Image 1 (cartoon, rainbow, N blue to C red):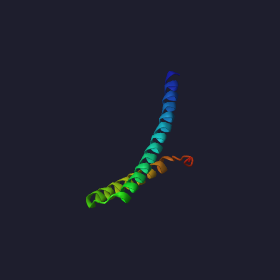
Image 2: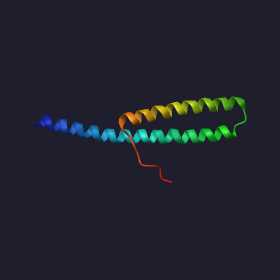
Image 3: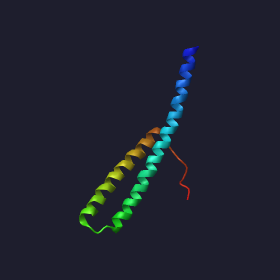
Image 4: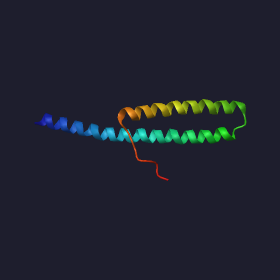
Length: 85
């Protein structure tokens, strides 16, 4: 009986962990999206060639990270409500 209770509690913890993992994933997607928007503003205002190159490399890194996070979210079945204004 005790082992059944332990198994039940262990499975319950996994469900809670999964929900917090999903929230962390959504939070990270939002963060990368925000950083992409900042990068676009920086790119529009930058004049120095070297810094423009740095901005482009950062944008590509952020896009790759965003694609990775979206594919991970799709694999795990994560979804969320539309963004509120």
